[in-house]
Length: 272
Image 1 (tube, rainbow, N blue to C red):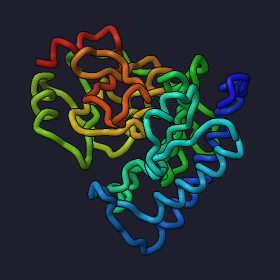
Image 2: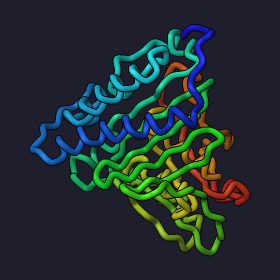
Image 3: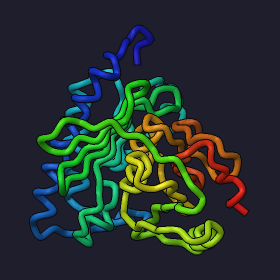
Image 4: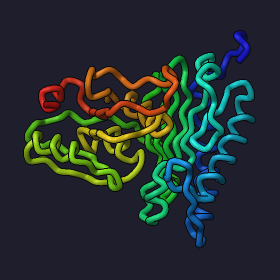
């Protein structure tokens, strides 16, 4: 990217990204409402024509919106870290987060688009194709939920009370570590949902924490992390409690992490 390149204000870019995510969602729903085939990638993860239709829609529109900013999607060709590490800005995209949920037709899948600047997500858009709800945020401008035909609503995380802890869990990836962690919390309520919707439950003040003790990639978390942070929460690794960062290492896997609503609550005491 040319050093002289200046991106538009985040507050101006974000509504355009919301529109792009909605276009991708339309393509996904066309496939969802048809009889679709499922193939598998080299790592055995499922792939549908919806993933690819969404990927092409988002990539094409983002390149038109910001021609100088690279687009890196789960369905892109791999880009060597030697090249990626030179990017000051780039779009990080999961065109269909929750492919397993899509295949089960349970509606719990999302379109995730993030703008990364110097290792941090500064725009995050998460669209829920089945109902058209869109969560969006940009650095310094708050986190919002837009329901179709309604004005956007400002989001904020909830204050955690140890006698009333609500936890978001994974519909497809429940683990022994998660069970152990939950047992240490005592009598809690567990909400099981798929994809980035778990982050969104934290951002909108429905749950206190989403613990993830399994593998995720950077495109799974970036958009939703921006939304959670702007709503007053945090996304931190489980060992050092440092916030997740992006494009800082060759591999794209995240460490295990916690998405927390209330930064003042002592989650560390429940980790061992």
